[in-house]
Length: 312
Image (cartoon, rainbow, N blue to C red):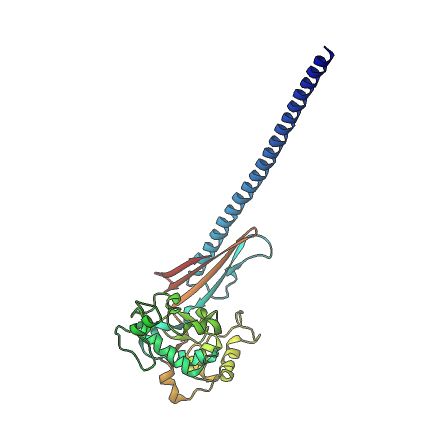
């Protein structure tokens, strides 16, 4: 009987121990579930708050665009900078789209010397730059006749690139990357896209273009072009400020370089001092989040035409 009694007590204690472990296990699971739910709720709140801030940042950037489209607003108007050091706001930059080379305009007119000069300024061998210019010409013309240093369908097929060239003007700057020889430009000048456009009137804007593009288009040394840049920067010597000088004629701009009068008729086909196409970049900030909206607008005024819009 004693043995039976001890066995019963042991069995009862084991059941109580198992039940206690089960309860503790349930408590641990509940605790873990509650903790996870709490963190998920906090994370969801953060995501929702971030989403709201992102939307507000876009709205602020769009507000900047709406202001900048007004033709009475000048490049350095204080109304374009409503971005405090801390807090929400927007900042807008207005630039001439003519500050970049219109690659289609140059190729369609077969005026490729500025391209050759630019590629060599970037460090490409002159012969390779000449070949690349012909490759670009063959890409946009409507025939299969190969230029002296060009490439047509058979050449691209040998490279395993069937269907090229496309035989039309470039639809995007990314399409330029498919032209044989552009891979070296990618290595020499990773930001080469900033030097080209498809949207300008076709002439380089001397009031906005960087020095290397002006040098390539004019066929002048960089040291000569630097004098134009210095004159354009105004008294403070810094570009992008209120005292910047805007040339009122091509002749006025070129006097800073000393271009000969005989060269002017030819040069005037490549340059201008204003372009009717503008690039407006607006950055909106809400909390810790910023968003950028870029539009390319032609004929900013009563009937502006938006040619391109990007949001980042």
